[in-house]
Image (cartoon, rainbow, N blue to C red; front, side, top):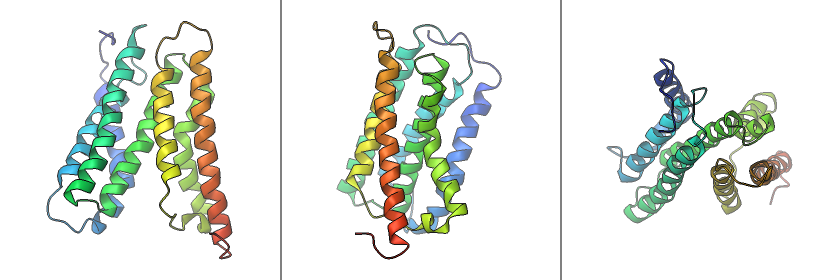
Length: 212
């Protein structure tokens, strides 16, 4: 077992994760335009259960082998992320709400994995910046309204999100070379910072009608 027994706070932490997901996703519900949940969103919810279970381990007593268990659960969630996209396209259930549900869960997954990487000593506190970037970006739009402009679809954004999650999963493993986990996590963080910087620059130019 990779947990030394869950505390009474574990369910509350899982519930807090689900609550955050609901708060940031439900505003897009009117764009769903379908009756029922749909198969792709059902897969996303199953992924959400896994991420909630990971969130419950934050701050808990974890064994030295916890990185393997967390990485395995995270890998299953990562695969489900790929599956829900395939299901949405093949069944014709791609909706703005489903995309928002998926995107916000990606952001929460990164936040949770960053917290666990720090907790397990695989990276320094700087790794938490990766989990905070999405929310700092949203907070910045309250100060600068031009940052709330809709962004165009981007394969770069999807690719970098996958890279960030993959590097965090690799970071969680107990590598025999000292400092390798931190180096892996730093690579993912650099890619994520670049992606957010590119979107910010596009939005800055779009406010004057110069974005391509």
